[in-house]
Length: 245
Image (cartoon, rainbow, N blue to C red; front, side, top):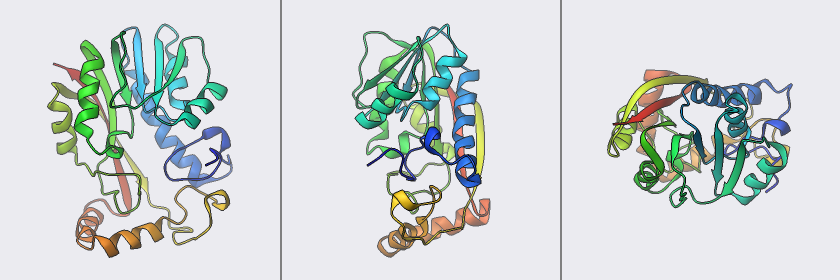
């Protein structure tokens, strides 16, 4: 798949239409998470786990030229794009599986945004955070805290704030500062059947996936309705700083 295609899975900021308000709003939410992470970094060595095409990793490195930043992603195309478009003297990229990535150099901070919900065994990923983290280090991680399995076929788990904290707490990582974000639903083109390369924004056509999901998982609709009653027509995201106890 060409990285310039519009998909709900990855953002390539350089390839987004600057005049498309929907995609720019989605990009802003992602950038806010990285800005939040950048505000809390400490120490010398930083790991961005599941860095995608590298735009956020580059932000961390640019704002902290005194730190060595490593971006890791399993997708070789994303890593190649990062190496071609987001390079800085204190930044390197590695193509590796987040659950299995190992390093002789421990990390003072691990940033891992919108990662945990994608993996079959989130506990294995968090255990690897703990192995890679220096004593007293911190993890900045994020998850959606409203249902997503119906609208995003790449997500394997839903989280609440409580289940997110519990998962990290199993590895002695305790929640500190947090950032909550709201992303209002886009109804334009909800049931479009355009191929990715013809989409006008990333969420176009999501309604088709939602209906297919409910046909297979009708009870999931109850959870969606409950979330709608509580949060309205929006997705909610939580980014949190966890410190090793």
